[in-house]
Image (cartoon, rainbow, N blue to C red):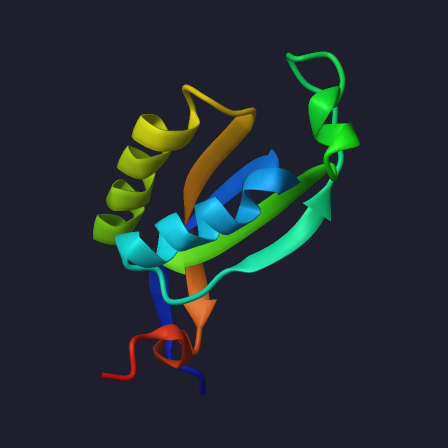
Amino acid sequence: MSEDANALCVTIVAEAIIEDRITQALVLCGAHGWTMSMAEGHGPSGHGGVSEIQGGNVRIETLVSAEVGAAIWRALEADFFPHYAVSAWEYDVKVARLARYADPT
């Protein structure tokens, strides 16, 4: 039987041009990894505009503790929301083998 545990999934959709800045912020906030994929959609801005020209959008997801999730949210509010086309949401998830994603130290 696997060892299931609860975690927070933080999902960020942003312009691909800032993916490195976002992943660096995740690490600084305490995330140990993430999953990234290209993303398409339609929202309040109407169309992709600049982001389409500069590489589209990415969707980044990370599984973290509530504390790390709060740090990520603060970083998004301070450094990304005011300056870039970024959407984010978080939700509680049940994760199989959560220890696999924990810090090995």
